[in-house]
Length: 137
Image (cartoon, rainbow, N blue to C red):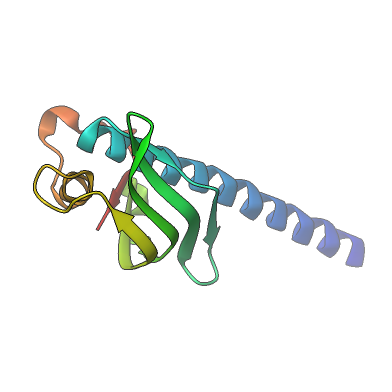
């Protein structure tokens, strides 16, 4: 009986880790898509982690690169997430803390403005796909 409980516990733990890894990859892929759609840029970071217990995530040394140059960067970004629409492939960022950052401009043509605009604007029907994940501010 104890051995069965141990096996079930390990199996559930392994499934949670697999799901967390998969969801982390989906979120990162979604953010990369949003960056590319906003400004034909790329997303770079040193680390990204997701916590189910705190319903949050953390990324370190995050950069949005345009033609190989960091146009927007932060030493750390932490966010709380709301998973109420996870079945619709939507992750809502409810509290975002940007730490130690720099931006190469903030006007309407800047990478910062275009990226934030991309995250806050609903997708037009021609870009909506049922398999597309979306991170929303």
